[in-house]
Length: 201
Image 1 (cartoon, rainbow, N blue to C red):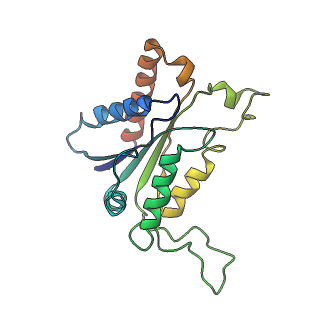
Image 2: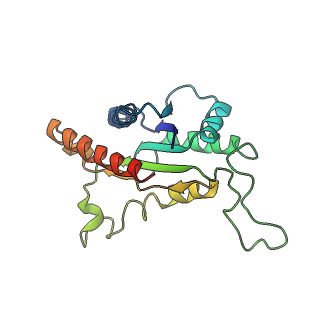
């Protein structure tokens, strides 16, 4: 894993300033910059986007790291537009060739037409919801994890392109719990996750 593409999906909207995901991106770059072997490219979805350049970043990278908040149980609107536009630009252009099926037998092989095989991706999300909302009986997410629930479609999207998923990291209770003390803990836990992840690559 030498070439890392980091996408900051945070944006300013309503009461959100997009600052936390910029902070997480900075933590990621700080961690990677300790090793001179890594080449890093970044995108912030609020910036001016050249679609072909973004496609080329996906094709170039060994590892894509996504940082995103979750709004109303989905990606922020600009991040969703970014994915829609960039992946569509990548049709027969490095990201995917087709849905993988043939007209001879269209019932099988859906989702096998990706062109990003050999690449990996890692997802981080940030939530107002506490972790217990996903784990405790009777709580809101009915004991369904982030990855198997709200972000299931996101993972299938990446699988469609041929990428392999690495274990991600989810920040919980960020809105109400983002005290200076908790921010330190967030960074410590996330850095440990990065150390473990990159040790195993």
